[in-house]
Length: 249
Image (tube, rainbow, N blue to C red):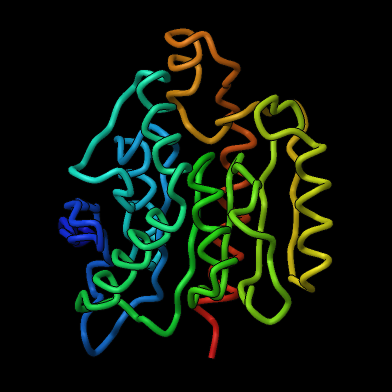
């Protein structure tokens, strides 16, 4: 196998078992730790798509963990169920952040993970999660979102939000709109955050997920896969993470 794969089991402060999916480069070790990325999934949970994201990151030279924020490894393809779980998390965002912090701590203890070079990427609901981790002042140096929920748990504060940010936004996204992007830019400007927003013309919500069209048809929601936007945004994210993590001194 060209990468290392393992399950990370974390007991959260609220006594929920979190079953996250970890991938590392084949040669990552205590003597040669890899820069590390936390991956926050879409509202479906740690499904095949986000597992493959984590595997791709490992092949690109990063240690990566797909975070099981729902607990017990729960996942679904049903939008109503996904929305129910997401709303439960949004109703107690302090608990959500505590779960992320617990996963972060355990992930940093994995042999081969460089805890001094940390980033986060998030998809949809997961975009909010990694941005909120940065807003909370967790030690992330770089955060990237794909069609992410940009709504803050609390607004970013200058000096507390230390991560650089890359946002991949679909121009035709009806769930996170361009108006939401403008509000996000104002928040980042106010906190003096270094950020970039890449807008992909014609791309809808969930444009990076090859299962988006199938999920849209099954659930009657406005999603759509866009191969060109998916590839371009992935390449931009890898370059961004290499600049801020892999090549960081």
